[in-house]
Length: 387
Ligand SMILES: Nc1nc2c(c(=O)[nH]1)N[C@H]1C(S)=C(S)[C@@H](COP(=O)(O)OP(=O)(O)OC[C@H]3O[C@@H](n4cnc5c(N)ncnc54)[C@H](O)[C@@H]3O)O[C@H]1N2
Ligand code: MOO
Image (cartoon, rainbow, N blue to C red; front, side, top):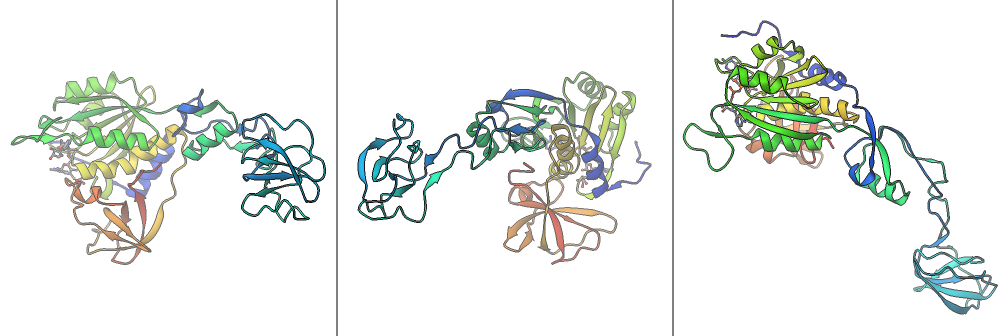
């Protein structure tokens, strides 16, 4: 029977090692429409002034000089530009977003406009050319994640392509003779949870599962799945512990893997690992128990993918956590919690093989040795995980 002859690393050390393990994948230029979720590898500069022209911020009247004003016509967003400067006492009806005619001193919104009044009013209601940015200004720094707002700004600035870091590719190798992939499992059978769960987690951390295989508990199959992978990371689920069918450690020894993390002092999720294969590919071993596997995902897989995709480690929120449990000495406990205003409540159902608690939780709380109810803890979000 295999034995573990070393101490597990502390949970925070494991996260730190995984965070620093990889450098960002080489950059490439991609259409901006495909960049969301990726990380800018070069700053984005404004190609022109933003906004590009003086535009009306309201529907109403563009007026020149002092009133009363005579309305000469209408200008629409996207319509012809008013051909001549407005003279004092002249106005045009104008729509939000339309080019403001030369000579305009203000736009009077319909609601408050009095074309017979003397003055133009206190606010001009004009969006000035270049008030957001001047041509050549840095709009976005390198390292910025392309969020929905960034995607919108890229369009606003006319940046149809951007330079981003590569998206880490993942081969998922699910092991277990008991596993089935559809329907309600029969006696002795278990539905594979990792293909859907890891695919979603990988996507949320900026990667993509390009290939998923389900193999039986045979070392030759596992060795072949590891050595033939055409991906940046191979995630192996199950086979991580001490049983007669748990071959991951022996196989890794046989193919020259260098272990960076091997066993973590957390519960659940102790038998997880991070290793480097010759040729700079990464192996993440997730324990087979589903909740333990989820904990290993946030401990080593997420941080590794952040490093490869160029993402900064997400800031964790810290709140008092209330619940009726005590972490064992020397062990970090990760428990599902729900946010409840200024604190978080432990959700029951955080046993290693159960996902019920995690599925109802907003976050995983990191409870250190010595934690008791009410003490603040770091929270790892589970909704829209680590994006
Ligand atoms: N003698 C010991 N036994 C175990 C130890 C130990 O230290 N000594 N550690 C326990 C802990 S903690 C965990 S976690 C598990 C880890 O097991 P493995 O990673 O080797 O995984 P398996 O043995 O293949 O399976 C464990 C459990 O998980 C279920 N499983 C596996 N894959 C999936 C999947 N894709 N979808 C759903 N469920 C899965 C499997 O059916 C088993 O019930 O070992 C403990 N034992
Ligand atoms: O630590 Mo195991 O990973 O308890 O279920």
